[in-house]
Amino acid sequence: MDTKELLKKVRKIEIKTRRLSDHIFSGEYHTSFKGRGMTFSEVRQYQYGDDIRAIDWNVTARYNEAHVKVFEEERELTMMLMVDISGSESFGSKNQFKKDIVTEIAATMAFSATQNNDKIGLILFSDEIELYIPPKKGRSHVLRIIRELIEFQPKSRKTDIAQALKFLSGTQKKKAIVFVISDFMSEDYEQTLKIASKKHDITGIRVYDIREEKMPNLGMVSMLDAETGAIELIDTSSKSVRMNYEKQYHDKVNYFKETFSKSGSGVVNTRVDESYVTKLLSYFKSR
Image 1: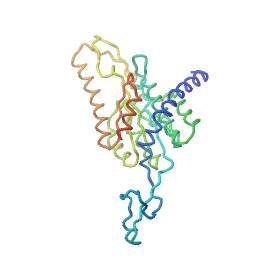
Image 2: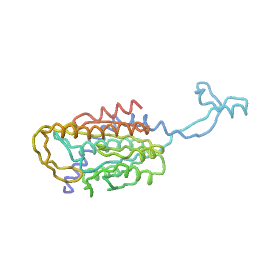
Image 3: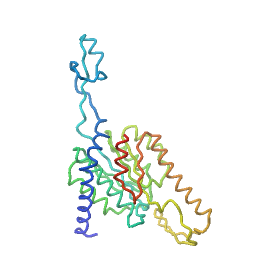
Image 4: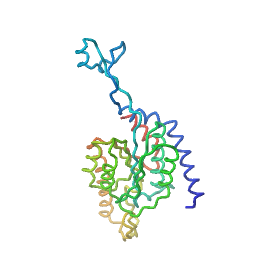
């Protein structure tokens, strides 16, 4: 992709996602995540209308007069976007690739964080860490993230979510709001997610295509495995072959839902032909 075409694409995504984050997501993002970061500021005398739950009973007993704890919102949070760029993300039908939706979601979240003056960092992963951009603020930083999401070419086509979560725990020492955006066609990340979610506020956003759920009956077909690059001759007319494919697919989807829920992390499922806006808004409101 030449520079002119790339800039055009970046600008197009900025216009679309910035409008969404300005008018829809910034308030919801603020309410869902910002309110959690409260730090103790001071103790002062109780005033009419104060929440009685904020009374500091130790200080009240000492001075024989009601005192309340005052908390202030943490001024700055860090958002980490962890984006799967393995081979399976290039799958698409109905003129929409998973990769395109993933880019839009990541850009929307980044602009929402920018509205709140938060830092945004990026981890692009396959079965290795392909790119790490440390958290920073500002529009030009977000545009760099969008640019990488559009044009970065991964070295590997495979996926290892556990490896990416391990890297997050190793590099992000302070609590962060983390969005893992993937199709989650990977397993064995339960333990690393459990460790990471003790420190960070993690949400898994699964982006998928309806045509991945079932294998159509098309007879003998040469199929390319997006994550290994291998071409295999598959007899799709065989019922057991189709059922085995569906079972493997649904096992991975259920593993994602159960593993994230058990670790106390959030779960969002959005299909490429659905509105991710509706899905994300409904998730924010439910928190």
